Amino acid sequence: MGGTVNPLRVGVVGAGTISAQYSACLQRLPQLRVTAVSDLSAERAGALAAEHEGARVLELPQLMASDDVDVVLNLTLPRTHADIALQALAAGKHVYGEKPLAMDVAEGRGVVEAAAAAGLRVGCAPDTVLGTGVQTARAVVDAGEIGVPHSATAFMTTPGHERWHHFPDFYYQPGGGPLLDMGPYYITSLVHLLGPVERVVGVSWRPSPTRTIGRGPRAGESFEVTTDSSTAGILVHASGAVSTLVMSFDTWAARLPRIEVHGTGGSLSVPDPNLFDGTVEVYSAASAPEPGPGADHEANWRDAGVRAGYLDAGRGYGLADLAVALGEGRAHRASDEVALHVLDVMESVQRAAATRGSVELTTTCERPEAIASPVDLTAAAVGA
Image 1 (tube, helix red, strand yellow):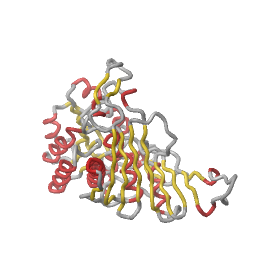
Image 2 (cartoon, one colour):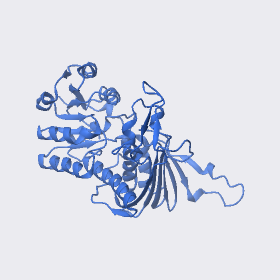
Image 3 (cartoon, helix red, strand yellow):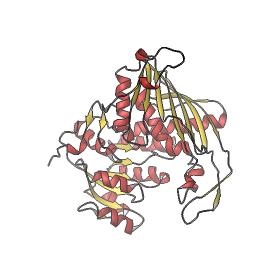
Image 4 (cartoon, helix red, strand yellow):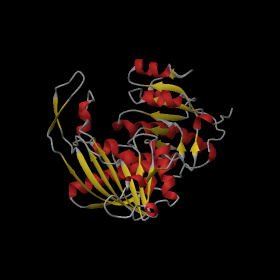
């Protein structure tokens, strides 16, 4: 893990807000070197390129044709994710992109098939699941410390992004909503913890027909909500475990956990899957207090410590994992296969909500290989 690799030369497409987080990580990861940047704004592209020695600002066709770009880091808007990925694959480049893989499963399947035909890799966020939070939780599950896992809960509840986002309209239009926005973090974590999903049931609702922007140049302006702003789903995993998922932009306050996994021998509390780290706690049935008044169940939760995952990780570690995987000849973890399956889960929950029924998924995936111990990718040696 993290052995000698050649740096993968990265061409960044899209220099918007999220690129700053990627840039900070790419500067300290020896597996990656930014050589080119392309953006609709030459000013933004120049500012990002200036953070990486030797990086050039190129028009998109030039970047795709460049001999010193091995992989395209696709940080564009979701509606262009598939198009940029297909252009990169046609140009003989590997691709790593922000979530979602594509706007729908049919489009995403086209990307996966094009990569397979070209013998190229496609990776996709979220890579938060590769940090010490979810990977330590997985280590606990895999060690059998909560027995056989049979269920999980996953909650993402906020009062809505319009309270802080200056241009929040797209979150409340078709293609938006809390499930598509935040669902990838939670569902990808559930796939790592419990494996792929076979069938789903879903419901969704829209309590408010309009929203009012709270900050920025449009503060006080109202806009129409044209997609459901809350979704709940039941996910039946191939393992037999069942996950309950609630994603909401309509909840003012809650004391719900982010993710919990329950097994025949205990329970597991998983930290925020939108972050790379956090405290993992375990509740053991073997040491549970006797039932009755005064039983202190809180005292039975214990910190699992840091057992696995990429240390001090940030956005871009999935791309570094892809670079190492190429050198080691193994599958990369933040893969197109997983991203397509997660997209299928979300699309199927929406379809189940619309039809008031259950939906069988058309995709599956292998449970990604665990990162079995804490790994510092910044310490990896880089080949000449």
